[in-house]
Image (tube, rainbow, N blue to C red):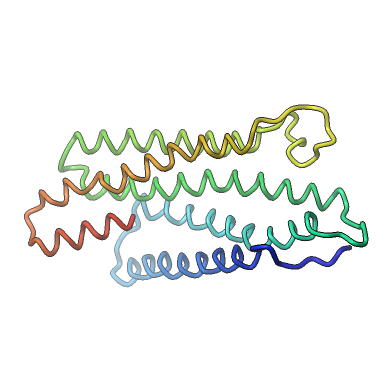
Length: 218
C-alpha cells in the first residue's frame, strides 16, 4: 500500500480538530464538574450538550484521520497501488462527516435553546414562541442535512462507488444551501436573549457581562 502521510493542509486540519477536542473536553467537562460539586440537577440542556459533544468528538476524529487517508488516495501514487477500497473509504468518510455535522450542529443549538427556555421561559410568552420557532428550523435543518447527505446518491452506495449506475445531487450546492439556515439561526440565537437580559433588574455591569456571555454562544 502506498505510504500515507499528511500534507497539503492536512496538518492544519489535524491541529484544528485536536484543539477543538481539547477545548470542548475542558469546557464541557468543567460544566459537568461544577454541576456535580454544587449538587445541581442536570437539566434537558445538559443532556443535549452531552450528546452534541459526543457527535462533535466523532466529527473531530474524522477530521484527524481523513486528511491522511485522502492524501494517500488523491496524492501522487508512484506505485500505482491506490485501491478502489481506499477511494471508497475517502468518499464514505466525507458522507459520514456531513451526516455527523448535521446532527452535531442541531444538538449544539438545541442545548442553547433549551437553556434559554429554562432561564427565560416564565418571563415572556413571545420569547418562548420565538425559541420554539428557531428550534423547529434548527431541527428541520439538522434532519435535512443528515438525511440529504446519506441519500444524496441513488443508490446510496454510489456515494462511495461511482462505478455504480445511478445519479447524485450536486453536493457542493447542497452544502451551500443547508449552510444558509444554519447561519441565520445562529445569528438569531445570538441576539434573541439580549432584550430579556437588558430588562433584568440588575446592575449595568452584570448586564454587560451577561450580554458578552450570550454573544459567545454559551
